[in-house]
Image 1 (cartoon, rainbow, N blue to C red):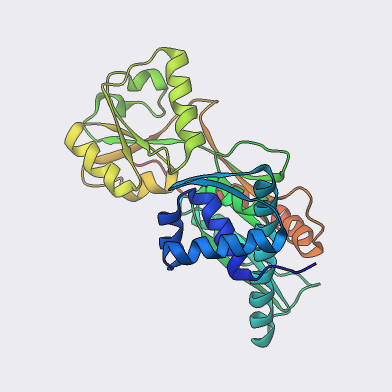
Image 2: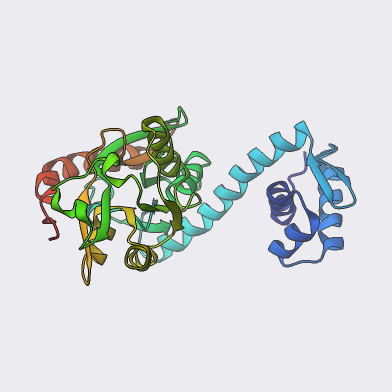
Length: 311
């Protein structure tokens, strides 16, 4: 059996993601004719039809779907082999690839980075940043060893260790009448402009908020989507809106006419979890998860009391 070259695997993987020769070729930094030749070379090599195409329309065959799934794993292991060899040359015995969302409490990230394992004294931790829903896919595919993620659905492909559970915080203008309440209910926000994380930032969180809103029959005056707290701050002041944010992001903009209050909704909470593959056999991963659980449990009370309520 002949093993396909990495360039052929990459061609199939990118084409499967784009299902368009022009976009796939652009991602690979080659022209369309070169991409077409690579796909034909690959299909000839494996003696299977992986893609059905008609001009620019591309569809995967059943064989193609199975091939690409395994090709991703093969490419991942090749990349990890290079990373491990590079790390070893620099004095690291093991490399742990950990994903984190930019919306994760920095305290949790710092705590994880400070973990030391006696069984792995030469451990090097490499961080990768992305949105939570993207990170869980990367963990499931084996591209990452683990990831800190917030507001994601449970899946049998992953083990999810809860490391933090916090309310959503509402950032609002300092002259908003509801500021007199120490905590807010969703009903208090009826008739306001709502400022929500954009669906691509966290689809599951966005869906949760809109579902609870619909079930309670609460009407927002308008809905704005943002990707950063700074964008939310501008909309709060311009439209007298209410922004749904993490505690740290709300605290960061709680100044110059903006204040914050916790949202008291049991179904709308920001649960942060440490995600690992359910079928992982790695002793390093299991030891790290156990150490993370112990360390976070011992420091959680102090962490929860760090931020006072903005006035």
